[in-house]
Amino acid sequence: MSTADLRSYTVFEHLRREGVPLRASARLGDAVGAALWDRDERTSTRYSEPTHHTISLYVEGGERIRRRRGNQILDSGGAGSLCLMPSGVTSDWDVAGHVLLFHLYVPTAAFDRVVAEALDTDPSRVSLRDETYFRDAYLETVIRAAMLPLDWNEPADRLAASHAGQMLMAYLASRFTDRGRRSLPVRGGLAPRALRRVTDHIETSLDQPLTISDLASVAGLSAYHFARMFKQSTGEGPHRYVLRRRIERAKRMIAEGDGTFAEIALACGFSSQSHFAARFREATGMTPRQFLNAASVAGRRRTQDRDAGRG
Image 1 (cartoon, rainbow, N blue to C red):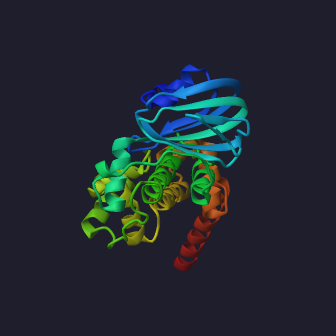
Image 2: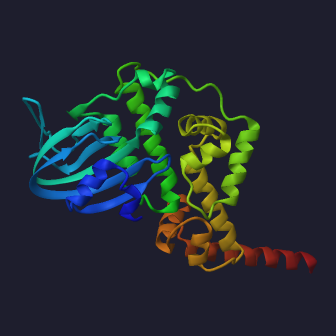
């Protein structure tokens, strides 16, 4: 994805203009953005009144970075250090040495919607806290396990990445705001008609990128509520459900000889044959070629059995 798609995020644009090497970036639905920066320099950085919230994780390195806040000097704890940089809060940083830096950029409007639902309160009365160099096992695990391993611009992975972004926002709303510590309980799953609309939309859009926001809009719900209610209705999270349906379509197309592996990959929402093969093997224990061979053998046996029955 072009970096131009993220230039509306002021923190992203500042680092881009400074020439910091960018490993990956993408929009993840609901206008949320993610970036992975590979920084190795000695400099000072000021994020002046950013127009969005930012979640930051030092994935690797960062031991020699510190924040200047008034008369305070806050020293980094290195890899695993987290920072929350709220919208409108200017921050100053001294950078020295290498850091692999993950950023999640959250528009205030998107965060306010999550706050209204998670805390059942007026978002204007709630603010995200300014937190520097803290540890949180949940935040770090979601970022490292549910976001960093994915190809954010791969259509089949974007749904999982956008879901992880929603999980992070919900957690921040309940744990890192100036009121409330718990999310409201889920009160039932999707209405049958809404569930049918969503599953029908998924079936007709398996060849397209899908995000939580896309599916939530079909259901007429916010992304935050939709993900939880969909899982309660189906027993699966949206990403797992969509991936399963993509694989089922691929299996049917392979068995019916409906296209080359590359064509089947695109028809099932995978941007490349190699990504398709990896996901297919994870789901079935076989490569697409092995599945084709097994399906061919099974087809010949059915034909032989049918012919024997006629005889």
